[in-house]
Length: 335
Image (cartoon, rainbow, N blue to C red; front, side, top):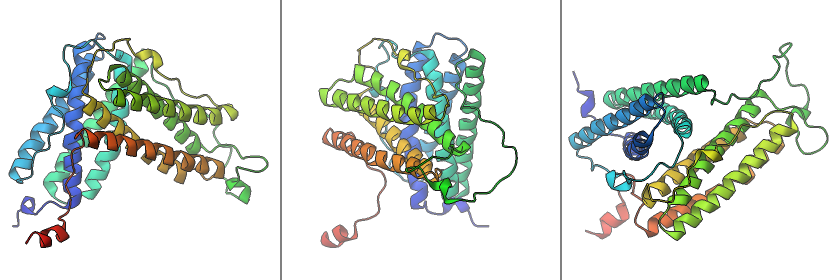
C-alpha cells in the first residue's frame, strides 16, 4: 500500500503549516506573559491550557519540518518577550483576548483542513481545531460565570416565514430603510467587538513600544479602530439596538517594554488581515446597500494602514518571508 505521507507537500499545505508555526510562536510569547502575571486563579488554568497547546504544536511542527527537510521558521522566541516586565493587561482582557484568538483559530484551522490533502497534515489540523473549540468553550464558560461575556443583541422571533417581495429590501440610501436583518446585526456587533479588542491591544502596544516610528503607527491604529467602532455603533443605535462595550480600562499604566516591536508589529498586522476578512464577509452578507458600501469604504483605509505596517517591518528586517514558488527567470539567468 502506498505511504500517503511520502507525498510532497502542496503549496497550500506549506502555507498553512508555516503560518501555524509563526502564529503559535507568537502565542507562546503573549500567553506566557499573561500567565506569569495572572492573579485570578480561575483564569490561570485556561492560560496554561492555551500555552501548553501552542508549545505542543511547535514541537510537532519542528519535528515535521525536519522530516520534510523544510527550513524551520524563525518566528518568535523568548527574546521577543521581557519576562521581568510588569503586567500590561487585566485578567479579564486576557480571557477576552483568548476567546477572540480561538474564534480566529477555528476559522483558520477549518480552512487549513479544507486546503490540505495529506492525511498527517489533516490529522494535525484536526487536533488544532479541537484545541480552538476547547479554548472557546473554556473562555466562554468562565466569562459567563464571571459576568464579563457580552451577548449579541436580542431581536423578536419572526411571526412567520416570508419572502422578499420588493427591491426596497436592498435599498439604503433614499427614503425609508428596512430594519437590519439578524445577520447584518451579527456582523456589525462582531466588527465592533473585534475593533474594541484590537484598540485595547494596540493601546497597550503603543505604551510599551521602543521606537517612535512604531509607537506613532500604533497611535494611528488606535484612531482608526475608534473611528470604526463609532461608525458601527451608530448604525446599531439608530436601530435601537445596544452596541457592545469597550475594554479601555483593561490596561495598566506601565510603559516598560514587554514585547519586542517586531512581535507587536506582527500581531497588529495579523489583526488587520483578520479585520479585512471580516469586512469582506460582512459586505457579502449585508444586502442593504448602505451597509455594503460602508464596509467597502473602510477596507482601503485599513489596507493602506496594513501596507504602511509592512513597510515598517521590511525596513527593520522583521518580516519573515513565507514559502514562495521558484523564480524561473532568475534560475535561467543564473545558469
